[in-house]
Amino acid sequence: MKSKGMKESDYVPTTKKNFAGIIISFSLIANVIILLLFFAPVGYNGEVHFDYTILPRINAVLNSFTFIFLLAALIAILKKNVKIHKRFVIAAFASTLLFLVTYLTFHYISPETSKFGGEGFIRPVYFTILITHSFLAAVIVPLALFSLVWGWTMQVEKHRKIARWTMPIWLYVSFTGVIVYLMMAPYY
Image 1 (cartoon, rainbow, N blue to C red):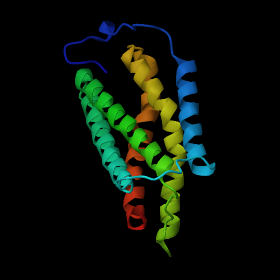
Image 2: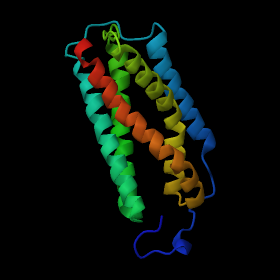
Image 3: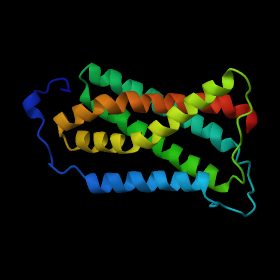
Image 4: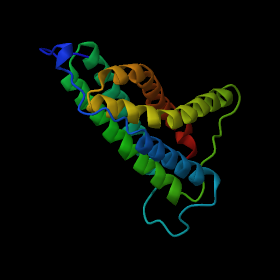
């Protein structure tokens, strides 16, 4: 991951810490909150004064941005342009964080989650995509955070090892998030 004009020896870790405790704690808390919003009687019971059904569309747009930013980050790193790679990864994190806020908001204020109404062949296709998306969305949280921290602190070897898994999984999760929205859109 050498940047143009940089040698491998120019990469000096700024720290050897891996921040495992913070990353694992944040990942567990984020995933528990999402599970509670789906499976526990937790949520807002008051009146909502705006059309909250716009939030899934915003989520899909943010997932689209994440996918595009990740693709650009991948292309940049394949061209060994670390500076541009970092910028696109930060952009992907920003759009993912905004997604998380709107996603949690929707599931907190929505009185009921919409149900998929497709029938026939499309039904198992939808649920296969949804299940793999949901499982990998939980997995990507710690992977992406470790990748970010190790890249940011110039722990290049650790970053490379985990990014080989993080990038394709995160691309899949962001892409399938859009697909899930498109398949669910008629039922919101």
